[in-house]
Length: 585
Image 1 (cartoon, rainbow, N blue to C red):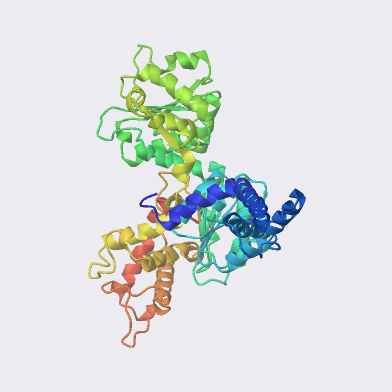
Image 2 (cartoon, rainbow, N blue to C red):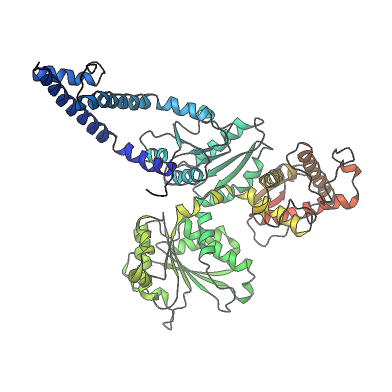
């Protein structure tokens, strides 16, 4: 126990007491009863007034209700019992009252919270997110409809408040303090419910907040999540609501190719990627690997080779190309229709070409079943051992079978080429869940300002976004929030970027001027309201001598050009987050 603080001890003791409550109460009561019976027998024997067992039993039971212990010349057994017995009764009564009024007490706690996080829907994903926030000292309120959910007790043990109810109900959201919350994360099992929660939150907080409520809605279908990206800005409400959609398979695919790159850019060889299991994760791994090949400018070497292994590999190959038509110029997709539990798969003939040469450079196993994924990984390892080919096995979580990848000594060395990737733990991190489209755009805008030297004379604006103060970070997020509203002023909207090589959108001169003025007015409004101080040295942000914002009409053309330049860069910023500007006419 040495070195542990009081908080750590409480977190360890409280779950233990919750699990062994009846045992503790029973032992405590039995010990008190034994001492009381013994003490009464000895007391009457010392007085020379022996009593029957029935009388002594009755007096002993009365100790639990504080009705029989007020006597003189008390022996030590009775002295302990007359305090321990009512203590056990009080312990049981308090616990019973807490259970009866637990929901009411929870709501009292909720009404006292500010800047907390609401998590709608408990499960492993919801619990992991709750742990992430609680570890950083951020209070969490979880809303769960199923009162028998196995995740309620673990969530409470971590320190979260659990409220029962339907998170899609506006009254439940209001009762959980959505108006005072900092963020709300909807991770219920159905995309429709998560979307409904987002819409209801937007209506509840509209025009009732001084800073935006960050709303994250999990969309299980990757294609739907990708297509909904344009709505994130369309549904944004200035200073009150910020929406982003989240899909663990899209995020997981990006992370897995970053942590385990599919190729070495410095190598002149064209890599051969093997993807086993073309489900939601597998399909996104294919797309991310192809995009990485293209974004690194490696298409001049030739097309990336990717082989698909699945029970319906050919059908899925065709579907991937239909949904991503620009994949074909970037990569060669080959399909092997195989069941991973078949003898053909374990034979591994697909790993070799007609000349019995194996040129596979990396393997991603993306099966939904952890046991099947590990079996497939081990089967491939038998053929690829000694070839220095990484085999990345996607698992649902980092525990369970994936712990085999962290084995030590001889066993670990024998499977050194196997790498586990726990999808839930990797993707359910605070930075990833909250660091969505708005965050990426805000950071891109700041990096552009740093690159063009806007803040070279100011100590308040470091080169790194992470070192920027929270106030200025939020100011850039607010600017990102306003993008959808701004471009609607010139008859444009945002849609998901489908064509990777699409021409960069160019605003017309009159549109550029309208948007530049709109951006200028927003910056000036932020400055005058104190949400962001005007940084010294940023030519576009100046005050009149009386410290009032300068109107657009009184600006020098050189000052106006700073805003026009930011408008010109906007399409490029948006393309980095897979969004494109379209004209409505």
